[in-house]
Amino acid sequence: MATNKELEKEIKELKVMVAQLTGIPIPRDPDAKDPNFMAFGSVEHMGLIGLTTVNKGDEENFITFVGKKATYRLVDEISNFIHYPDPTKVAQLVLRQKVSEFEAGPPPIPEDAPSLWVPVGY
Image (cartoon, rainbow, N blue to C red; front, side, top):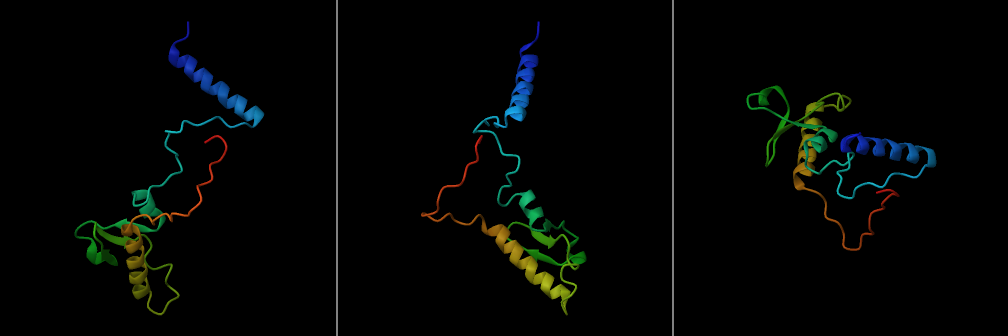
């Protein structure tokens, strides 16, 4: 006789097959975490905008900016700015802008903003 775990696995596989054959998506658990979601201010968000933190003692090796939470540097300091007459100065300005954006927190949602679009199956 099959165990409950085996039966649950089989049911999940059947749901996937039915969804593939019919094109009707499987309803998601509303409390489930979206794997594509990236929280504002998270490490993933920091990587997305091209920032990383600097360990103590490494400040002299990079162009750095001391923020409220940590000391930051750009992942790629020069190659994006090489066509400017002074790439280090431009890198410092961009670093300061990115850190300010990162540490400011999520932007406020206007009161008259429409609700977000929710795709079928979510």
